[in-house]
Image (cartoon, rainbow, N blue to C red; front, side, top):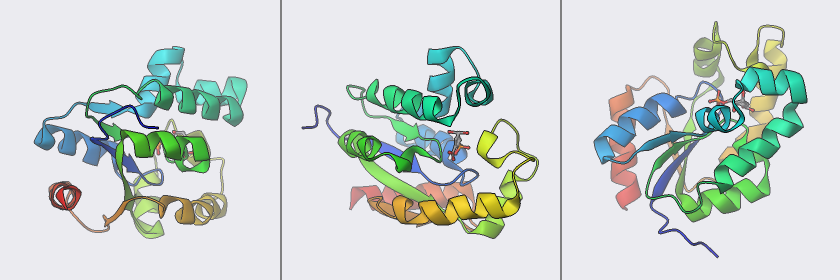
Length: 172
Ligand code: S3P
């Protein structure tokens, strides 16, 4: 049973899909606060995402991710930018759907590859990971992202354009 008014906009998508960038612009335009789940985990745990992965491993990070998500259950309407791996745990889906509409920001591999090149602080897309590994991770996750309520294509589009489409489609 959902306790909230289900008014949040929850952005999901692979690393580099633009969840934080789109989230910031969407929050501004819709006059809702932005919560970045990775930033919340860093705040709650007092360590960077990379440090959590290095010191405790991915399983611990996933546990913290679900805990952080749970801590939002009673939050007011928000725009929530999630981490790319949030979709792997069924409990996360229950919480996200209770919070509001889940929106998949879809981008093709070419776009993601470009955006991830040179990025840091992402243990699952770091330079010691092969491109094939990252691409495989994307392939595994696509069917999970596709469980979202709405899918918005972002390839070759300006942030404002994507945000406008989200605003229109969440009203439908
Ligand atoms: C992850 C994505 C990251 C962060 C963590 C794990 C993933 O967030 O949560 O490094 O599993 O895809 P971004 O999608 O914001 O990069």
